[in-house]
Length: 194
Image 1 (tube, rainbow, N blue to C red):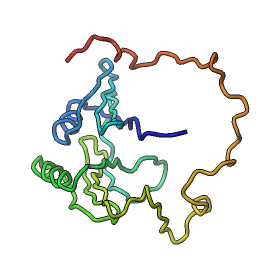
Image 2 (cartoon, rainbow, N blue to C red; image 1 turned 180 degrees about the vertical axis):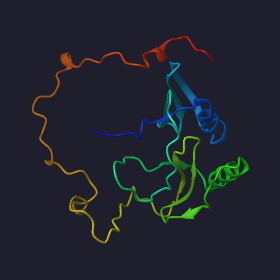
Image 3 (cartoon, helix red, strand yellow; image 1 turned 90 degrees about the vertical axis):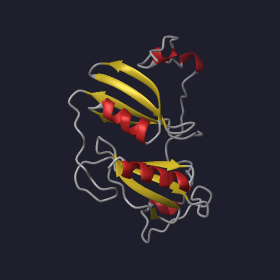
């Protein structure tokens, strides 16, 4: 299998208007699709050539409790923060200045070795990191393990291992490969409300 990137990350909001103003007008992501009806909407923002950010708008959703990026928690938990990579260091300073001008809390720019980062929150209290990749340290080209006591599976190296999971013994035959209609197929319609 080959992956191209993250198609989309789906988050939730109770205030789609504030979410659009933040992500489109302040952060600068294009709003490229909208689906739904009152009480249930999904709007897609373009992050880059292959990646999107999706917001569901559901009735009665409230902003999540504010939690600082990377700070450990206890109990059920599955999401820490969303990190978007900017193209240039100048882009980092631009987003920093835009957030400050909008009177939205933003951290200083921090040097993490392989990336420079700044941190903030969107109107839903979703923790956001904006990062610029330091070209001197490309972890994709040269993976590095600096954990002094890596977990057992990590000690086996960075690349996927064969024979860990059962082999597919009965692949789905082409004549059995059915794709069913789902929400969003209406985006192929020539009708456009813009």
